[in-house]
Length: 228
Image (tube, rainbow, N blue to C red):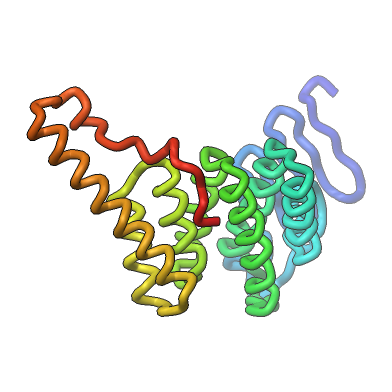
């Protein structure tokens, strides 16, 4: 009609606001957040089926599919699809953390499986020298799973590949405090060696008064990622 409003027996849809209401709750696409009537927040234990509707599916299956797509795209070396799939997977995981209905509990086994899927994708991205694609996702993963030792070590490898020696050493030392396995020790040794070479290079440039080379000293970004 002239107000742009559509009503039927299930609820109400307003085109001008992008808002959908029904008897179970409310979903606003403009904010991508659930409101208080949803059943997730302040709704006296009610659970809204809104979770199961629309493109932002909050189920284990939905998030798992995005991670499967990321793994498949990684094998096919379709990095744009990897980036997109990871974006959707993390968006689903983040929304689920913020908006869990009272009857739902965190599934630690499923969370662990998601983490391993994500790690495999990120490792493949780094190993294939797609560091720019991997970096934002890896740091987001590290924030979400700070105790994932191999991810911390992967952060060290990523920074070393990008020529950030001190950052790489920081993550390698952090990983070595969490795990003393041979793999972590090898990453730490590589970062320590790179740090020593970096310091020696700066010293040599400064002694030669070649300050133009001392500033960006020792661009490790061009070194092969032999440590993968």
